[in-house]
Image 1 (cartoon, rainbow, N blue to C red):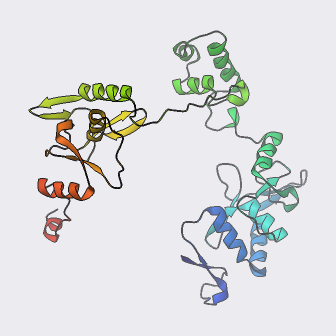
Image 2: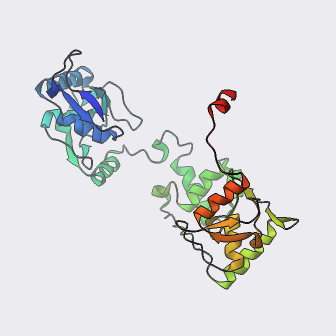
Image 3: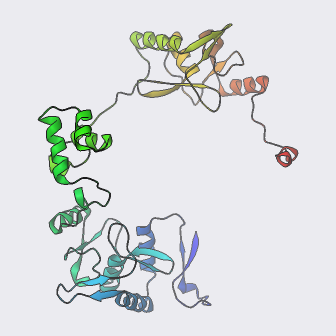
Length: 322
């Protein structure tokens, strides 16, 4: 918890001018807690600041915020060490309404910098997105500052792939754009509001070893990625920082020795809360099923103590030597 001051006096110690706030809350939650602490003097100070840092547009009636703004185009204001959106704070102090996290403040004028309370009203996220489309303030397509192509080129790329049946490599060579942009357009990941393409959801199958076919494929995969040294089957694929091998199978990650034990014993993955696959030998990267057995965490800890691989906190002499 942190202590927040709600008045401007630097030497004030009045309990009613201090508020406890939980550390790590989001900007919206900070703003809501901050709103609850507003009093008449706070409202007056905020109104003066909003007026000072804004200009009235006589033609549209908008009160344009001239202070700091965020990348989305909305005004930003800081008061009592809390940051919030200028139009939300303006609506709050002029209507005396506490806003929840779900409530959005819509701009009826379509100007994100406007803080005129007459041009503001409450709504949902759906209403806010609809307003962006109506007012043309939606940052999609060429309006996005990070965009390097326009709608016309995006449509050309889409037609070349789906109608003219050109390959992605041919499209890249003809349009001089990157591979990621082309793939995003043809798959519907980007520019779908122009092309009308729907992104296909890819549901990856994720399952454990369960059938005879799975065990057979797993055994072949283990044999493919081991190097036999004496009686050890040393894993020669990916080795983790802790010294154990790692393998992916059916979109799941396994420790290599666990995978080998499951494949050759034709058993399901043991419950990690109670059991663990132990090494009879001292080689962490060994996946020989004859050197592996099922045991408890206590037995595994004794194995580490036996092999000298148990972690021991450094002494003061070792720290000084570093």
